[in-house]
Structure formats: C-alpha cells, structure tokens
Image 1: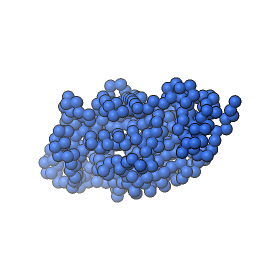
Image 2: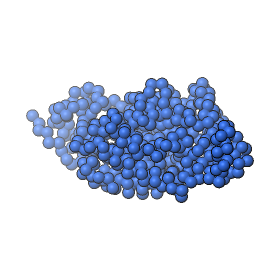
Image 3: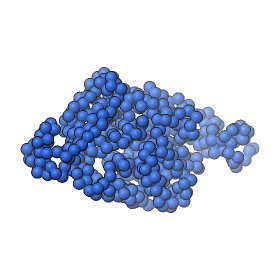
Image 4: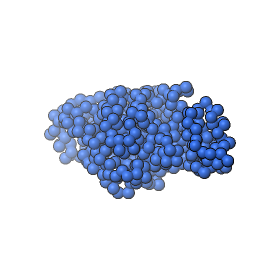
Length: 444
C-alpha cells in the first residue's frame, strides 16, 4: 500500500539523485552547517537560549549514521536505512515556526504528525520546536532505528521534556487510517516530506481525504515534493517532460504521473549510480488501462557487449572507460511508477478537495524560493471549511488561543479569553472533554 510503495520507489529515486549529485552525499553533513549559518532562522523555532549550531551538529550525527554504511562495499540498500535528503529549506522553516508559535500561544505542545519520518531528520526538529509528535513510518526496522535515534537526543533543547512523553512512533500505513481511529481530528500541524510523489492518483486522493480528517479545526499541512526538474540531469529526461506536457494539455489532476523504463550503470563497490538514462515512458492513460501495475526491477553484471546492447547513448570516451571497468560495475533496469508534482494542477486539486492554499512556491534543496520553476514544490494548506471565530469578540481569527481545559473554545487573544471566562466556565466544565483543570481567571 502507501508506504510499501516507498520501498520500490525510493530505491529507484535515490539512484536518480546520486546520478545528479554524487558529491552531495559526501558533503551532506557540512551543508547543514552552512544552512544554519546562512540565513536560516533557527532561533525562531528553537527554545530560547539554545545555540542554533545545535541544528547542524545533531544533523551531522544522524546523517553520518546514514552515510557511513552507504560508503562501505558491503553496504545495505539505502532504502533499508530510511534514507532522506535533509536540509532546512523554507517550507521546513515555516512548519517549525508554526509549531513554535502554537506552543507559545497555547502554553502546551501542539499535536504534530510526521508522515514518513524515516530516521527522524524532521522529527527531532518538530520536537525541538515544541511539538508533541506522532511519527509514522511503515518499515518496522526503521521504526526501531528511529526510536533509538530520538531516545539519544539532548533533553536541553527539548526543554527537558522526556522523549517518551512527547514522541510516539507508529509502524503504520497512513492510507489505512479510518473513522474511529485515534488519529482523527487530532493534529494542529501535519508534516509531509517527500511522500506525495510515491502515490498513484487514486492513492493521492485517498490520502488527501484522510489528511483533512486528521486535522483539527485551524490545523495546517506543510509538504514538499519533487517536480520534473529534479531529474534534469538524467539522460533522455525530455521523455518525462514531454509526457507531463501532454498530460497537462489533457487537464489531468496529476500530469506528472507516469512510469519510466530506466537503465543505470551502478558502481558495485558502493551502490552509487555512474550513469542513468530513460529508455521509454508509459503515460497516464496507458497506466490507467493497466490498473497502475508496477513491474519489478532487475540487475546483473554485464560484459562490454551487453553495454552496447542496453541502448545507452554514450560518448566514446565514457563508453571505453566503463568497459575497462566492467567487472566493477553492473547494469540495472527499472520500470517504475513516478508522480512528479506539477504546481498549478495540484493547487487546483487541493482547492477542489476543500483546502485553503496558504502558501505555494517552488524551491530547491538549498532553500531558495522561485516563482517559475524548481526541483521542489512546497505548500502550506489549511481547511477551507474552517470558520473559526473568537468566542468573545466573534471576529474571525487565524492565530488563536485555545482553552486548555476543554480544548474546544478558541480566542483571538489572551485578553479575549480572560474576558470570556465567566460566561465560558459553565459550558467548559460541562464538556465531555473537560480535563479537570480549571482556568485561574477571576470573575467580576
């Protein structure tokens, strides 16, 4: 189902990225230091008195545990490690600042869902920003690794809250959540990192319906996902672009959904892709006829003759170089479903589904914001059906204080909450959600 598809897709998509950025893996840990120093405002979501340099240091520790096995000859699959590409880009900053603001406004940790948590590169930041986090990860062995990672966090930047009291980790497919589950109407913030491009259109719509049910009134969803520009370095990428253009002309909700027949030359010593090419593309109409079936991938060591037969368009020097090292490389073929997000189409989809678009922009892994195009599309969503008014002055509000006793009544300011207490007290204590802790405001 939803996250099971992550296993197959991630193996393929990682190879895309490693083709484009082989040096990226080597310098990944140092990149996070630069991101922390050069304009990223960690002080806006970390607890006061915490050095923002802690962001880079913690990420370095987490990243090194991912990278070191990958650099060994006998390394396991990157997918088995829950590999991800961390970095404090703008959408992540916006999400963390929202969590910190809610924490400051309400005086209690907001509920946050981290979907597809992996090894916790965003999870620990959500905790440090003041969230009470439910982390969802489908792979059980990654869940155990995540628990170990988070259990070793320095409590100083969690404001001395024990990890076990502010973090729950679930090995669960989010697509199986249904009415009556304890995750419905529970979350102030939902973070979706690089998951939407794993879904076919049917599952995308199913997940969207689940997300809107998981949100509390006034809740926000933050997400990022890859666009077609993420694979511009792959040979014959124009085939993918042309397929997307034709789907846009047909007004498809998800014009980036397709299947790519890929071939790659992989360094057997470390699993890094030396070269990749698109061989052919199955477009959305063809996939709909086949019920979105996914073919298995295959690999094998090749002779110099099989290299030529693979259909690569290689310049002569590269071809000679690879043939001379044929015992050290292998040929892999993939037939993989992809869903590159097209910004305009997905904006229309979310609006039609009942969401309010609060922010939408293109970005890249370095955190730059673009108007026209980029390798990432980032969005902040709310529920269009939410009409939240201050219980005292009746004005429509966006930044809210909530009664901490019944957790049902909202105010635009602390002053309005205090003013309304005498009227609200009776209904608050009668509420089935009353937690037994009355407000300390006086009446009269």
